[in-house]
Image (cartoon, rainbow, N blue to C red; front, side):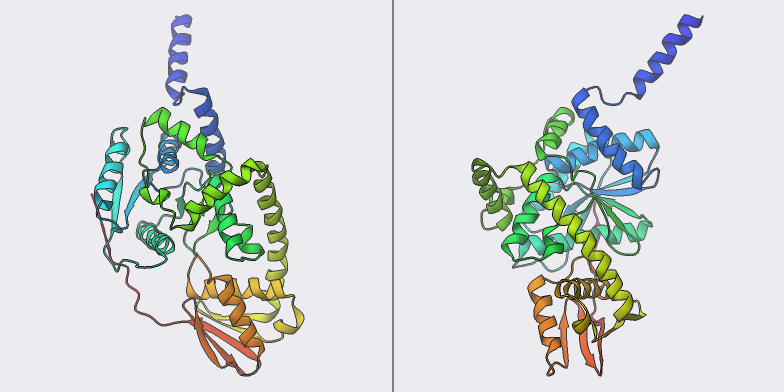
Length: 356
């Protein structure tokens, strides 16, 4: 009898072992540790494009949800940028369904971007995802950004002349707004590891054709990286540089927060006054970071305006002739010894419907 009970217990334990492949299980445990730290048993949303990295996210999230009984919402965004977009979204849905993973398609039906396509597509994507989270009262959105994305972002921002904040790039957890946090559990994963896990489970993934289009800077950066690795600038060295920059960025944030406390007064959620003494008493990088964060907070946007535009605004504010301007969804106006920053009034509707 005892022996039978022991065998039964072993069988139960074996059922709980959701991933048999040792390598994949090691990757999952790494993922689980990060998600458990922040989300625990709360509901969360994840976005799936059909690429190897996002399908791996769907795989690991479904395992996590079965282990901790979370309710997860797997969303596929159809940007409608190409004729094939909807059919590709349906294909992703079928891949997920083949493994019993339920998903929904969010369709964008608004104006399609004609320029700066990748940036505008990202804005569309986050708008749809954040609105879904708001309607469902979900506090966490998980994305599949990984180590290679981190490195590519570093080089893209280097090309654009970004400052410290831009070059230090992504962190594993960030506030999108007051209601939603974005979690990036794959930032210490290489793309090849995510691809390995996806092929182990799904046996397939969808390759976005834009990933091979060299009109996009990100695609060209991937080719530059290949050449740089031949010269000895490998992934580990770049990651070390990014981590050092992130450490410096945290120090900058400390002094930025002190400057905001000293010089900035928020009158309401979307309006603040900045004492012009900030230009005389604070270092240039602290001023730049302060204005970038203020513009983002007041506008209610995740990304601040480009650094070049913020620097141009600061330089104009320092001159006596400045009166009023707009930037990043904000109105900036000189008022005696203060600078007023308030949200620009626009009719901003997000047209979309929930697909199948």
